[in-house]
Image (cartoon, rainbow, N blue to C red; front, side, top):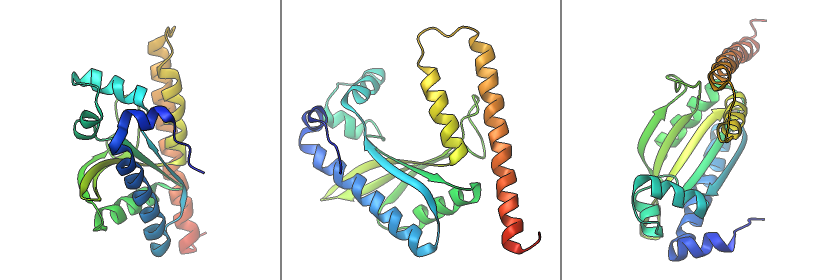
Amino acid sequence: MEFVSQKEEEFYGMYHPYLKLARRRVLDTLDIICEEEGHEIQHIYGRIKSPDSMCKKLDKLGVPQTPEMALTQVTDAVGIRVICNFLDDVFSIVNLITKHDGWKVVQEKDYITVPKQNGYRSYHMILEVPVRGRHIMVEIQIRTISQDAWASLEHQMKYKKEVPHQKLIQDELKRCADELASTDMSMATIRELLETGAV
């Protein structure tokens, strides 16, 4: 069952059905193409950016807090997250998304090959999805289970008001991200050995 807050519908107004349809179209299409190609996804989910979060982003951009600005100035009003078991799966899913002709890929950022300075790893894509004569921007983040766990925990801690020993914590988070990346590589190697019968 899909929960939609009244506040969400009120903020996005006439554009809300387009956002819902874009989210549903991408989720359903990813389910279909991944199943057809035999790619297993750990889980996948989508959201429409909350009005509070969207208004903060629009304010930061210095533009009016309107649904029109939300759809034209921000690329993640609709967000999809795809969580994969293995590192190789991430790039397989990226390839499937790129090849699919139901949308246009307008931007890609590979934070796995070149992680952010804080250790964040994920593959980001912005899609332009046609919905009833309109083009809705959808951001997809594709990452492994360990990358998602790290990002979720880092996100929770990042928004604490006062953080003692901030530099130490940042260094530790970066070290954890690097260790998890090494684990992802090791797990991929183990899977490859099992699949080739080398062990």
